[in-house]
Image 1 (cartoon, rainbow, N blue to C red):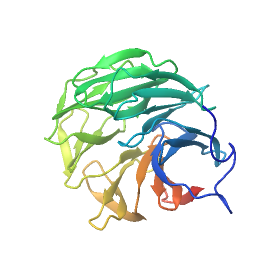
Image 2 (cartoon, rainbow, N blue to C red; image 1 turned 120 degrees about the vertical axis):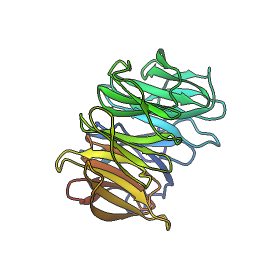
Image 3 (cartoon, helix red, strand yellow; image 1 turned 45 degrees about the vertical axis):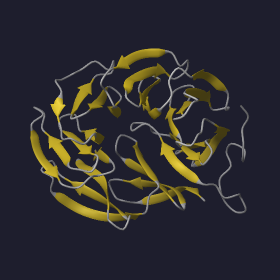
Amino acid sequence: MKLVGQTPGSGLRGGAPMIDLRNVATSPWEEDLLATAQLGGVVDVWSLARAERIATFETLWDGGGWRGAVVPGERPLVVAGAWERHGVCGYDLSGERLWQDRSRTNVGAVTALAGGRVAVTYNRRATRVLDAATGEEVRRLRGVERVIPLTPDRTLGVGGGWCRLLDGSLDALEPRIATGLNLVWFAATDGEHLVVSELGGPVRIFDSDRRERARLADFLRLVVHEPVTATWVGLRQADDGQNWMLRFTNDAEILDRHPVGLLRDVTSMRAGRSLILLTDDGVQVLDCSDRSVRPLVRV
């Protein structure tokens, strides 16, 4: 698989060709690397510290769009999946395809986990945990429809009407927590409390005994615990499509609101300290503690 587009290390300035970014992916505790995906499955890997692109190559793509994850480590990898027929593939940053698993189609999501693993969810089938370097299946999670990494050693497994904390080996830490009829879509923890945002709402805040402490009626499209101010941060989309950053307490008291505009995609990194915003103008890095924003990718 050859590199495409501009050479690694180049930015998108001046007379560079326009690109159509559709997705952004990283792991929530990652400090440096993130990936953006263009229409057609072309992936760019960026270094936050160097503020530049370090790799560009082609991955899987079909009519269902791009589903992928960047897996950090000594040898960073990108794992991408397709809905229709191609399955899941792993790539190194040279663009070389290391493996391909066609045994299942209808890939719903590819999520980076600690320890060089990825969780792959499928339509109406058990979630599989794969070694990102080899594609070998290392675990199967039956009944889990969504996997949400919280910390390197804590993951939330989500099923219909419930969620459950898992340890670093993906074994259950606690009994199931009953939620609403909607699937939990985003979640965060401060080590004691657990906040979950169900698709369509509400947002529930659970104490350490997993009793519901408070709730917000609105759906938040991302939730993190911001360690500098020791508050929760989430994004709420208004009826006009504009997004607002909300900061709130364990009792669901909203402390402030800040507009962040229209978003194509969003993720978090640096253990809740930064949000990565994909906009029509490119990729921005938002510091959750002081709300400062700096551009990483301009298009």
